[in-house]
Image (cartoon, rainbow over all chains, first blue to last red; front, side, top):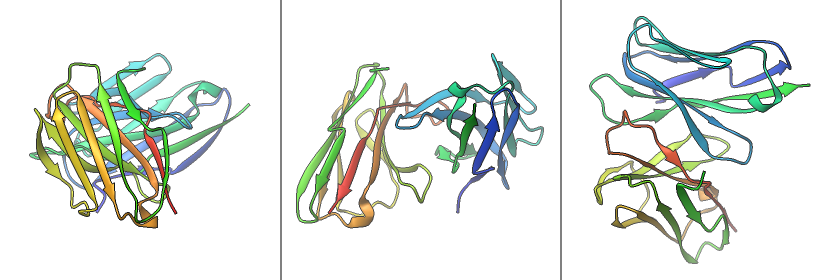
Length: 111
Length: 114
Protein backbone atom coordinates (compact mmCIF):
# COMPACT_ATOMS: atom_id res chain seq x y z
CA UNK A 1 0.00 0.00 0.00
CA UNK A 2 0.89 3.64 -0.17
CA UNK A 3 3.56 4.59 2.31
CA UNK A 4 2.34 8.11 2.93
CA UNK A 5 -1.11 9.61 2.70
CA UNK A 6 -1.51 13.22 1.74
CA UNK A 7 -4.52 15.25 2.77
CA UNK A 8 -6.40 16.94 1.39
CA UNK A 9 -6.33 15.66 -2.20
CA UNK A 10 -7.68 18.99 -3.41
CA UNK A 11 -7.48 22.44 -1.85
CA UNK A 12 -9.33 25.49 -3.15
CA UNK A 13 -7.85 28.59 -1.57
CA UNK A 14 -8.86 32.22 -1.81
CA UNK A 15 -5.92 34.38 -2.85
CA UNK A 16 -4.36 35.91 0.24
CA UNK A 17 -5.47 33.18 2.61
CA UNK A 18 -3.30 30.58 4.32
CA UNK A 19 -3.56 26.83 3.97
CA UNK A 20 -1.83 23.66 5.14
CA UNK A 21 -1.34 20.30 3.49
CA UNK A 22 -0.39 17.19 5.42
CA UNK A 23 1.60 14.05 4.80
CA UNK A 24 0.94 11.14 7.18
CA UNK A 25 2.49 7.72 7.63
CA UNK A 26 1.81 4.79 9.93
CA UNK A 27 5.52 3.98 10.05
CA UNK A 28 8.56 5.97 11.09
CA UNK A 29 10.18 7.78 8.22
CA UNK A 30 13.85 8.39 7.56
CA UNK A 31 13.23 11.69 5.81
CA UNK A 32 10.63 13.73 3.97
CA UNK A 33 11.07 15.55 0.70
CA UNK A 34 8.56 18.01 -0.76
CA UNK A 35 8.08 18.70 -4.45
CA UNK A 36 5.84 21.07 -6.42
CA UNK A 37 4.44 20.28 -9.86
CA UNK A 38 2.88 23.16 -11.78
CA UNK A 39 0.05 22.30 -14.21
CA UNK A 40 1.63 20.80 -17.33
CA UNK A 41 5.03 20.75 -15.68
CA UNK A 42 7.26 18.34 -13.85
CA UNK A 43 7.91 17.87 -10.11
CA UNK A 44 10.47 20.31 -8.75
CA UNK A 45 12.30 19.63 -5.49
CA UNK A 46 11.49 22.13 -2.76
CA UNK A 47 13.08 20.88 0.46
CA UNK A 48 14.15 17.90 2.55
CA UNK A 49 13.54 17.38 6.28
CA UNK A 50 15.54 14.83 8.22
CA UNK A 51 15.45 15.62 11.92
CA UNK A 52 12.60 15.01 14.34
CA UNK A 53 10.60 18.23 14.84
CA UNK A 54 12.56 20.04 12.13
CA UNK A 55 11.06 23.24 10.74
CA UNK A 56 12.30 24.96 7.60
CA UNK A 57 11.04 28.06 5.84
CA UNK A 58 11.20 29.23 2.25
CA UNK A 59 9.65 32.69 2.00
CA UNK A 60 5.90 32.04 2.47
CA UNK A 61 6.32 28.26 2.76
CA UNK A 62 6.89 26.57 6.12
CA UNK A 63 7.76 22.88 6.24
CA UNK A 64 7.61 20.81 9.40
CA UNK A 65 8.60 17.23 10.28
CA UNK A 66 6.73 15.67 13.18
CA UNK A 67 8.38 14.78 16.46
CA UNK A 68 7.71 11.09 15.87
CA UNK A 69 8.87 11.37 12.24
CA UNK A 70 5.58 9.96 11.03
CA UNK A 71 4.08 13.09 9.54
CA UNK A 72 4.94 16.34 7.87
CA UNK A 73 3.15 19.51 6.91
CA UNK A 74 3.51 22.32 4.40
CA UNK A 75 1.94 25.63 5.36
CA UNK A 76 1.63 28.45 2.82
CA UNK A 77 0.79 31.94 4.00
CA UNK A 78 -0.87 34.66 1.91
CA UNK A 79 -1.50 32.35 -1.04
CA UNK A 80 -0.74 33.75 -4.49
CA UNK A 81 -1.80 32.55 -7.92
CA UNK A 82 1.78 31.37 -8.46
CA UNK A 83 1.19 28.77 -5.72
CA UNK A 84 -1.12 26.82 -8.03
CA UNK A 85 0.04 23.26 -8.58
CA UNK A 86 0.28 19.86 -6.97
CA UNK A 87 2.44 19.46 -3.88
CA UNK A 88 3.91 16.03 -3.30
CA UNK A 89 5.65 14.65 -0.28
CA UNK A 90 8.09 11.80 -0.75
CA UNK A 91 9.64 9.70 1.94
CA UNK A 92 11.86 6.80 2.82
CA UNK A 93 10.93 4.36 5.54
CA UNK A 94 13.33 4.12 8.44
CA UNK A 95 15.81 1.39 7.51
CA UNK A 96 14.52 1.56 3.96
CA UNK A 97 16.14 2.85 0.81
CA UNK A 98 13.37 3.62 -1.67
CA UNK A 99 11.81 7.04 -2.07
CA UNK A 100 8.01 6.77 -2.31
CA UNK A 101 5.74 9.62 -3.35
CA UNK A 102 2.41 10.47 -1.77
CA UNK A 103 -0.69 11.10 -3.86
CA UNK A 104 -0.24 14.86 -3.82
CA UNK A 105 -2.41 17.82 -2.85
CA UNK A 106 -3.71 19.74 -5.83
CA UNK A 107 -3.99 23.43 -4.99
CA UNK A 108 -6.25 25.81 -6.89
CA UNK A 109 -6.21 29.52 -6.08
CA UNK A 110 -9.25 31.75 -6.51
CA UNK A 111 -8.29 35.31 -7.37
CA UNK B 1 15.36 24.11 -16.03
CA UNK B 2 17.07 22.09 -18.80
CA UNK B 3 19.16 19.76 -16.66
CA UNK B 4 17.10 16.70 -17.62
CA UNK B 5 15.81 16.46 -21.19
CA UNK B 6 13.23 13.99 -22.38
CA UNK B 7 12.22 13.17 -25.94
CA UNK B 8 9.73 12.95 -27.45
CA UNK B 9 7.40 15.21 -25.45
CA UNK B 10 4.35 13.47 -26.87
CA UNK B 11 3.93 10.01 -28.36
CA UNK B 12 0.91 8.27 -29.78
CA UNK B 13 1.32 4.62 -30.67
CA UNK B 14 -0.67 1.53 -31.39
CA UNK B 15 -0.54 -1.53 -29.21
CA UNK B 16 1.63 -3.43 -31.67
CA UNK B 17 4.20 -0.67 -32.20
CA UNK B 18 7.70 -0.52 -30.77
CA UNK B 19 9.05 2.83 -29.64
CA UNK B 20 11.65 4.20 -27.27
CA UNK B 21 11.65 7.09 -24.82
CA UNK B 22 14.90 8.94 -24.31
CA UNK B 23 16.24 10.83 -21.31
CA UNK B 24 19.47 12.77 -21.05
CA UNK B 25 20.82 14.56 -17.98
CA UNK B 26 23.45 17.31 -18.03
CA UNK B 27 23.91 17.56 -14.26
CA UNK B 28 26.76 15.11 -13.76
CA UNK B 29 24.53 12.84 -11.71
CA UNK B 30 25.16 9.13 -11.18
CA UNK B 31 21.60 7.86 -10.73
CA UNK B 32 18.64 7.96 -13.09
CA UNK B 33 15.01 6.96 -12.67
CA UNK B 34 11.87 6.23 -14.66
CA UNK B 35 8.48 7.12 -13.15
CA UNK B 36 4.94 6.66 -14.42
CA UNK B 37 2.38 9.35 -13.57
CA UNK B 38 -1.29 8.80 -14.35
CA UNK B 39 -4.47 10.49 -13.23
CA UNK B 40 -5.46 7.51 -11.12
CA UNK B 41 -2.24 6.83 -9.26
CA UNK B 42 0.53 8.85 -7.65
CA UNK B 43 4.02 8.93 -9.05
CA UNK B 44 5.04 5.29 -9.48
CA UNK B 45 8.71 4.41 -9.49
CA UNK B 46 9.51 1.99 -12.32
CA UNK B 47 13.27 1.63 -12.56
CA UNK B 48 16.38 2.97 -10.87
CA UNK B 49 19.88 2.96 -12.31
CA UNK B 50 22.89 3.83 -10.20
CA UNK B 51 26.29 4.04 -11.90
CA UNK B 52 24.69 2.42 -14.95
CA UNK B 53 23.54 -0.64 -13.02
CA UNK B 54 19.88 -1.36 -12.50
CA UNK B 55 19.26 -1.32 -8.75
CA UNK B 56 15.49 -1.26 -8.70
CA UNK B 57 12.87 -2.90 -10.86
CA UNK B 58 9.55 -2.14 -9.27
CA UNK B 59 7.54 -5.08 -10.59
CA UNK B 60 7.16 -3.49 -13.99
CA UNK B 61 5.71 -5.59 -16.86
CA UNK B 62 8.27 -6.88 -19.34
CA UNK B 63 6.72 -4.81 -22.13
CA UNK B 64 8.76 -1.96 -20.59
CA UNK B 65 12.49 -2.47 -21.05
CA UNK B 66 14.98 0.09 -19.69
CA UNK B 67 18.49 0.69 -20.95
CA UNK B 68 21.22 2.83 -19.42
CA UNK B 69 24.26 2.93 -21.75
CA UNK B 70 26.07 5.54 -19.62
CA UNK B 71 25.39 7.73 -16.61
CA UNK B 72 23.98 10.55 -18.76
CA UNK B 73 21.49 8.61 -20.86
CA UNK B 74 18.49 6.49 -20.05
CA UNK B 75 16.05 4.83 -22.43
CA UNK B 76 12.70 3.13 -21.98
CA UNK B 77 11.92 0.70 -24.78
CA UNK B 78 8.24 0.03 -25.31
CA UNK B 79 6.55 -2.85 -27.12
CA UNK B 80 3.05 -4.29 -27.26
CA UNK B 81 1.73 -1.78 -24.75
CA UNK B 82 -1.81 -1.77 -23.39
CA UNK B 83 -4.28 1.14 -23.19
CA UNK B 84 -3.75 1.35 -19.42
CA UNK B 85 -0.12 2.22 -20.12
CA UNK B 86 -1.20 5.66 -21.35
CA UNK B 87 0.38 8.10 -18.91
CA UNK B 88 3.08 10.70 -18.39
CA UNK B 89 6.49 9.04 -18.16
CA UNK B 90 8.96 11.07 -16.17
CA UNK B 91 12.70 10.66 -16.04
CA UNK B 92 14.68 11.94 -13.06
CA UNK B 93 18.27 12.01 -11.94
CA UNK B 94 20.08 12.49 -8.64
CA UNK B 95 23.65 12.92 -7.49
CA UNK B 96 23.81 9.34 -6.28
CA UNK B 97 21.51 6.39 -5.82
CA UNK B 98 20.96 7.29 -2.17
CA UNK B 99 17.27 7.94 -1.68
CA UNK B 100 18.01 11.01 0.47
CA UNK B 101 19.24 12.91 -2.59
CA UNK B 102 16.90 15.41 -4.28
CA UNK B 103 15.65 14.23 -7.63
CA UNK B 104 15.64 16.43 -10.72
CA UNK B 105 12.86 15.66 -13.18
CA UNK B 106 12.52 16.11 -16.92
CA UNK B 107 9.37 17.47 -18.54
CA UNK B 108 8.15 13.95 -19.31
CA UNK B 109 6.79 12.12 -22.33
CA UNK B 110 3.00 12.09 -22.64
CA UNK B 111 2.23 8.63 -24.00
CA UNK B 112 -1.10 7.66 -25.52
CA UNK B 113 -1.84 4.07 -26.54
CA UNK B 114 -4.53 3.64 -29.15
